[in-house]
Image (tube, rainbow, N blue to C red; front, side):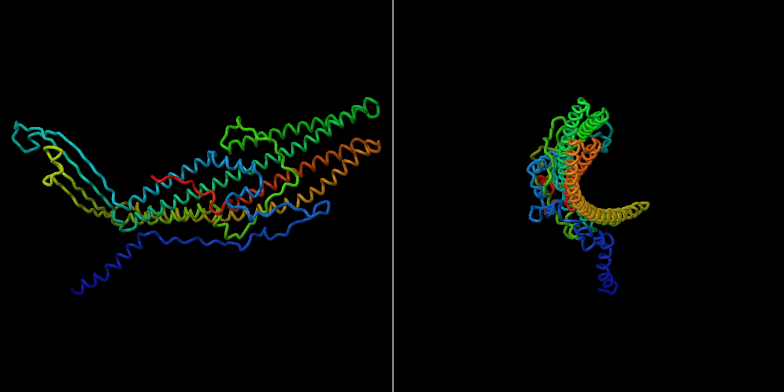
Length: 497
């Protein structure tokens, strides 16, 4: 072996390694994120823990022991459990997301098929007559028709020299994983939307009950003032004022019914039902309803629990793999082909005789020489797509942190408001009771009584609204934390053909 051959032998592996490095997908690196060690709002002290009557205020029960997949069980509400199960079965958006999962898995299967040789079989029969000119015979030479029978087996295979096939498979798998994570995100959104709509409906029912008591009080006031007016004890002003307050309260109740109907219709859509065929029963969110205390955990674990963050992660991996696909287009591709079978011009049986055999083996190596910069531009596009997916991932993480902090702060503030409003309810009821007694004894005007009753109605409605807001915000915190982060609610099972 001469010196030139030795040099060539040593350089060849290096060149091959360089080529492989140049066209392969770059090693995926997780984007660096500034992850706090703890949620700021989870470290804030509670505003107060004492109710108006001096007793210890308990607004939540621990949910740490509850199954984290079926997170709604922490609310201990059979009606809510049934609604979420029904929505999981019938929600239209969830069905769309499940169909997309099936499509993505099928596309990944198509990409996987390129890893193995493609084999096919063909049989055929022909009857033809060629002209004497085509056969090189003198003009007018009679040519008899011919029969041709054939049967062959074909095979083709692309050798994955520069990682095109493997990179394409990795990209398809990443896409499928992204769609599956998106399915879980849609599932969590549907479940959370059902729970929040359900609690809004119950809060509206409780507010309607409060308004019904207000209307009843106004009706009693009108009766009393009408009787006193008939006796000449009061003027028409107090009677007119009492009737005005009654009509106003009734109008408020009618307006709130519109809100209830709209919420009921929204719940019907989430359940996959026509609005006209669904009616939700009256179920007020009662005072003293205990809501679960949701553990926020560590910010770092949020990256593992949120399905939308998981989807962004898979999108980055797929974009990274597509850089390898784009790079491989600049290098040679090697296609192997084989064809074996038999051809006969006599009978079908003769096709399978050894003398009728025919075969072909081939290899085709091809690569672009002049493409006008198309492949280079495609690489640039793929790299830019990766940069875009990294930006989307970072934004998803920042949004997730902010949503958790928002809802932790919301629950903390609502808890403090609830304590104060309960104190206000006690005081307002006492004030209204005293005003009623003073008015009945003739020691105060009707305006004093009306002012006390208005204040009580306002405070009671505020208390009901806060109760509903706390329930809705608790669900929002669960959604922000990723809901069923233990693997429950995984992507739907799709039969593999």
